[in-house]
Amino acid sequence: MKLIRPSIFLYLFIIIGIHSCNRPVCENTNAIFDMNEFNSPEYKTELFNQIQNIGQNNLSYWFDSYVRENDREYIVVNIQGETLCAKGMIRVEDWNKIEGIKNVEGKGYSGAELAGLRFSIEKDLSDNIELVYADINQIID
Image (cartoon, rainbow, N blue to C red; front, side, top):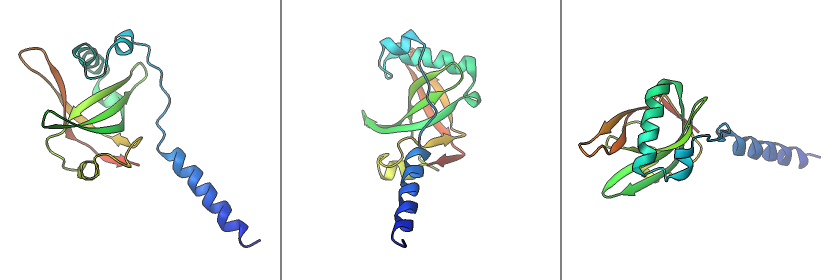
């Protein structure tokens, strides 16, 4: 009987661990997000408009992946709100507070909530839009 109890606790610990990083289910209802890749200009413009309308503080952010592209580093995040379900590519120049993500190139952080994530929205002369990491309160893994 003593062997059964540790295995039951181990089983429960694994089940709880698997579900702890799950973000709430959301369903996209925006045709622009359905028809375009998340790094396309059309998608980024629509995401910019949605974030402006809803407000950054009214959204939740969940880590998806780490990307290195054109000598720049990004985190890809799932962005969720009452009326928004999208992905965003956030350029990171200052890895303060999230250096752990960079050190392992995002491995092991998938599904972690990025609580209090803040970023600026930059638009260049060609109307290219980029989200740029500014700060975060904590990573809830």
